[in-house]
Length: 449
Ligand SMILES: C[N+](C)(C)CCCC[C@H](N)C(=O)O
Ligand SMILES: O=C(O)CCC(=O)C(=O)O
Ligand SMILES: [Fe+2]
Image (cartoon, rainbow, N blue to C red; front, side):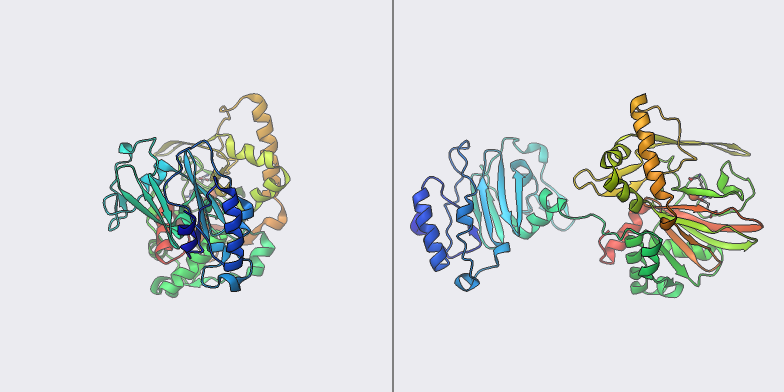
């Protein structure tokens, strides 16, 4: 065993033989002196109870001076692994990962398990023995090899594992963002994209989407002030989400619908369609006309405010992310009869990394709270107050006057909007977009979304 290990010059992959500590010590010395690394045989250990420790002293035997191991990868790319009774432990690229055996079988990328053309699994997961365990494990510079009891061999690129492991995911964000208050947003001087470049070049579209994903808002300039031209913009990045308001909508203060949006009243910051099970992902606004005063648009980064709550009062943040609420839209005006109910917490986070992905905040449309008992209700009101105070800080408010020609895209899962009361005739057009399709376009352009 020892000589086989000593002959192996592979510096990236090592397995320690725990039952021979004295051999280890000697090997460790060799290692330090000669820059050799060693590896145990690939067979899993017979005993699953007696698991060897990671032997940190042996890890430290990796030659510190690069000169001694210059033919190998840097320290961060060395791989060490250990088979436990119910999982495989793997250390690579500074990440300690733990893999369930069924997971390792299930994600096999061999031709019989996975269709690389369609990127679909062909393996029937339900046919995998839940007590499966690899018969043999081997690692070389780039790849983990697992042999299963039936002889099937699974290979995983070590880089692939880091990227796709739970531990690797946990260190990453799904959606890179720049959280902002008014100062941060203004100082960033995010450019508006020109309509022609947006419509006619991939660079223009990509630039727009990059800013939209980072800040949750983005503007297109020099748009012809019509509903049809606004529709062409929307269709450039997504499918239009048709709702009870129609596909492309116009609205003025004509009381045509049972909602205060159709008045001249001020509207406090909110997100739209909180009363849908899946609130609309993106809202497009294009002001076609305003002859009068007031009517400025208010924008507030909901995630920036939520982040402040997390810092000040993590328990309140948690409550806002756990307590389910209903929002409701009841309309009986003219021929419009609608009753919508959406359920979900105010703050929605990915459970594995606590990253926010959706804020549902609309005090106008919030329904009766009857999903939690009274004591939780009281704590929820306190948490809601903290969040509202953050959302209402004047320094978090970005005020813009929408003008004909300038279309605004708002991430309705992140950025709240509102408006100042106004006088005179004001006409806005716009639409909602399906979020999946906006993100799809962004990913196809090479953006992380
Ligand atoms: C945008 N448009 C005027 C069509 C609809 C407005 C919907 C307003 C509703 N209170 C909500 O927040 O969802
Ligand atoms: O009138 C506005 O500027 C926005 C109104 C509003 O909140 C909406 O239509 O969703
Ligand atoms: Fe709104």
